[in-house]
Length: 82
Image 1 (cartoon, rainbow, N blue to C red):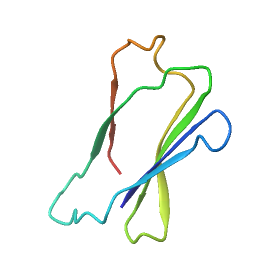
Image 2: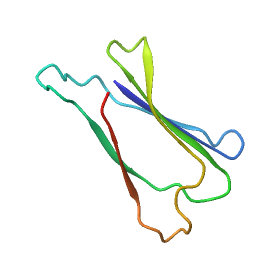
Image 3: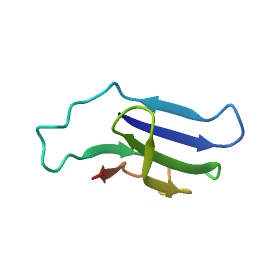
Image 4: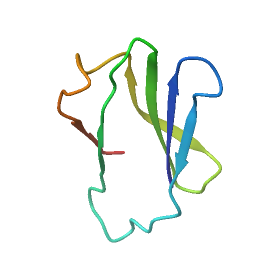
């Protein structure tokens, strides 16, 4: 499982994205990669949690604050290796 939490501004501007279970047993070095764009004064953080059972979660990544300086700036790639 992987879960991301996006926070910005005041509630209800939080968003949660959770994947279905993914079997990683055949992989020696699994990784999660995704692209993000964090522009604006109200960007607080993006967090990525990983779980091996859907119950216990480990925080693997936290990005805080604005990461782009303009709306037109390119998206950035994040790679998480749990």
